[in-house]
Amino acid sequence: MVAALMNELRGRIDAALKLAVAGSIFVIAGFAAFVCFTVAIFLWTQQTYGSLEAWIAIGALFLVVAVAGAIALLVVRRRARSLPPPPRRAQPATLLQDPAVIVAGLQLVRTLSARGVLPLLVIGAIAGGLVMNRNGHSTRHHAPSAERGTDTGAGI
Image (tube, rainbow, N blue to C red; front, side, top):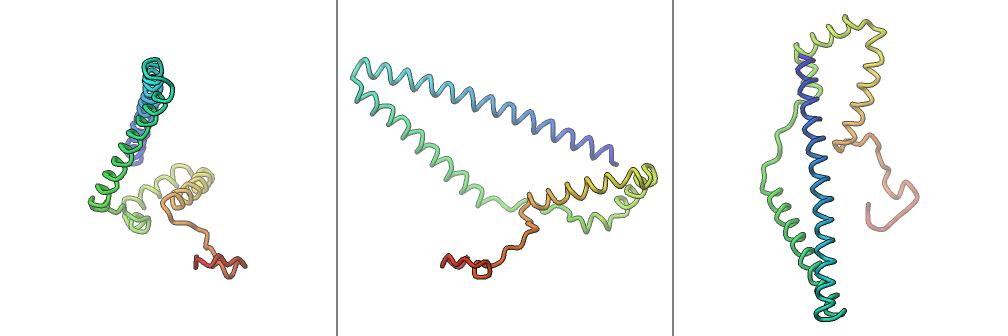
């Protein structure tokens, strides 16, 4: 059971790393191509029409890119709103009620002994805390602005 989870985790990490490398190569190559074409358009326009017209052409090119990016952003946001929310994952409380998880934990303790399990528990607690903070469940409780002595007037 633990081996299957580790294999699945390795597969996901491998896929994420491959996707990150491919994406970064795509972004860098695309940016380099865009810069080269921009310089070529500028130089051709400068030789043909003059410097002012060349800068206007490059400005128009960047305006078209900005508008296309804004349209893509709006489309992605609209699609994200229309998609159903992702299914909820099993909470730790429900996982601890699963007999298979309890048996696997007991077998792990029996195999590693108490001295070997203690570092794993500490690392697991740290990782769990990091995951909880990453998912938006902050452990810090902020006092209202009036209690901190600073009043912004915004009611935050």
